[in-house]
Image 1 (spheres, rainbow, N blue to C red):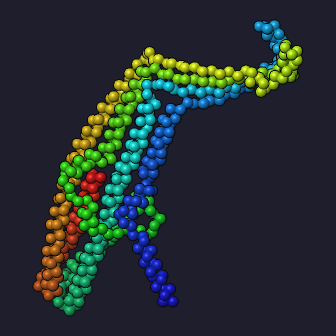
Image 2 (image 1 turned 135 degrees about the vertical axis):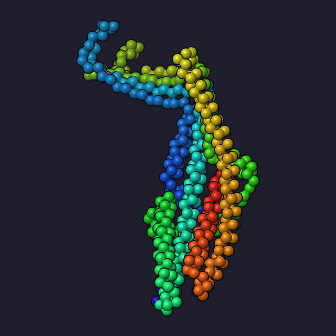
Image 3 (image 1 turned 180 degrees about the vertical axis):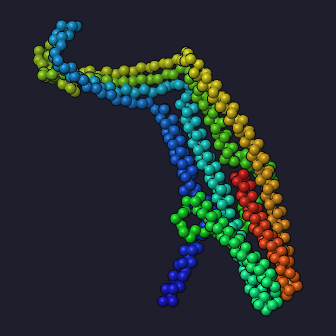
Length: 444
């Protein structure tokens, strides 16, 4: 029985441990299930099909057609002077066409399709980076709220102990009623702050679960993170080095650059309409004719005998092959081609302006992000020093308060400062970690 109980406890602890997600777990899960990521993946599949279509333009097409008709009612053929009976007929044809030259349009369309595919992959990567930053923000918010809850619990416990101490002193007539009431009021406020902190934590967990689409997990929880882990993942480089790397790897810039390349291909495609188009054509056809009520026979004058002229015989005798070339030379198409070229050139200029502007904005954002990291780091260091000093001051205040060497007002003031510095330290720590994530976002 003891062994069974031990197994149950260990299993329960293991399951609880398994439910704690790391930041990497959250990002990996979101990239597989996020609706925008999934939609972009399907969109990329559609774009990939354009490559197949573009490659197919290099091959000849092949078409088959067949028809069957009936002539009902007797009629008189004026041309032959012979009365015609009801009849039926069939015709079949097999045709193929191969483009030999169209101003290299097929080549440019294939190159454009490949560029679109590459751009789709870059856009998917950008969505992943944006999602990662959003998840990191929500993840750190949960951890921030967890620490706020811990501080609130600590302050509530201190206030409760002080209330219990003052109640005993009041009953012994060593403390006034006002001192007890003031501390009870502080205790009630600390309880309220703890409830607010717990509610904020629960809401932040809900937001993270919604973002990850893991609403079905009841005991969802996340792992803590050390500041050193973030600092090690994103070492502070020189701003110019970060910007140089970003110019080569930033997905937004790469996507816009590919849009520019696609616009250049569209100009080349539009210009192909100025060139003549040359096609090779081939067709094979045959037909069958039958008079209703008669047999498929034909009189052979050489042998003076009727010979079979059935379906297969007629198809063999009536077959026709056609080979030919067709050339189309554009002369005037109401300025459509020239306007298409001009529009493509304008689109290219717009994309170039957008690319230049994005490079400038990226440089500014990297400088701001770098400065934010340095400032956040300095703020964290200063706040850590302040917490150490304030914690020591509050410890002294607690000892003096127990000995009755300071008033309740002085004790509560020291406690308030201690709470404030603790909260500021938590805020500074997670602000610093998020600023690192922002800089990492621009560095990728």
